[in-house]
Length: 134
Length: 405
Image (cartoon, rainbow over all chains, first blue to last red; front, side, top):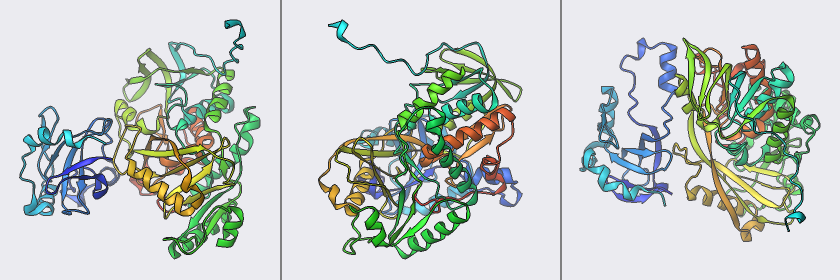
């Protein structure tokens, strides 16, 4: 079982959380202009990365807030936990800019004032050991 | 002492080195890859072909599934391909000259709520219209067929009935792979183990070769049969698949006397149980929620399915877990497979079978071989094209396929 450090509640068992799939998938900015291929990409196509993967989780039986996680899909090691709307903090320190303003805005609203105080850059070093699988 | 050791039995297949070139290369030496190679050789006369396996033969999901075979799917397209698979299962032991213990002991899908009952009866009707054997059982009939099931109303989700497919059952998965492998070998197919694909050689948009840890192999056609790693291969080839790879776990108990005469699946409390020929109780349930390539999952998933099993089968309370494991399943958003062409010329893909690939093995092989050999899909896999995610012609078996995914 994963031990997940909720930014608001601390370390809790995976059973308290709900998985939300790939992070940083923005709602199309101009939905009326999308063709079928582009809609298919948005609706059905998600990255299926083998390795470091940015994904969303919801602490559904705790604070009920969404947050992002960078997790290795082979070792299941949790490398970073960071707020919705924040750019992806890569394990190597490389950041991927969050594309799509619509998605960022929605994320910020969902997280609200309960957004974690820890910054994206410092969190990878503080939470990594706790994120290991049991 | 050495003289007293028996002779090693005859090997079922050779271990050739890769040739410089083949007419077709199948990536993935599991059930689907081997079945595809078999039907390419047998039905289409393509014998200058190779199956590349990065590990050992049938060591992925083919070694990790719970061996259930059934065809009681709701939608016409699914019923057609899975029923064809079941018909092939019925003749394959003779055709492959290998008794892999296909046991048509029936599969029961339990209903625990009024919603379940309605869905089940609808599915029985749909199955009958599609020529799939199916019947509705009331709780008393359920108990007659499987006496160890608890049909009392003192449990959280009492059994309100079940659908039953008498021709469904189980088979010995390893032996199925070995049966296909031996026939492939006899027909001249090269089965190359410990050969990992690291890239593809393309001429424009056409694939012309496969790069491996054992050198580059030229080929006219490539068929991808890599289940959980399909996305990784597609990325190497330069296209995307609407696949998410998840861990799927299963477990077995120690050996017991035969107590369980059929296969019982419960969507609602979520466990499926059979008893292997040797005597282990074999159980599985749903995938772990997160994406994963680790061939292992979280223990609470195992705990949950055992709790469900003990509620349905009180006799199992004193059985022990002998072993748990995980595989990597390639799930699609409509819980149906993808078998067909890809955006890369001469490259074909068979994936997305998710949690139910074993039962589909013969039909996957038959239709995928047809697709590779002729360049166009077989009638049975035409609806399962990659394009359906653009056209919207999904085959939504989520919740409809008699089991949650």
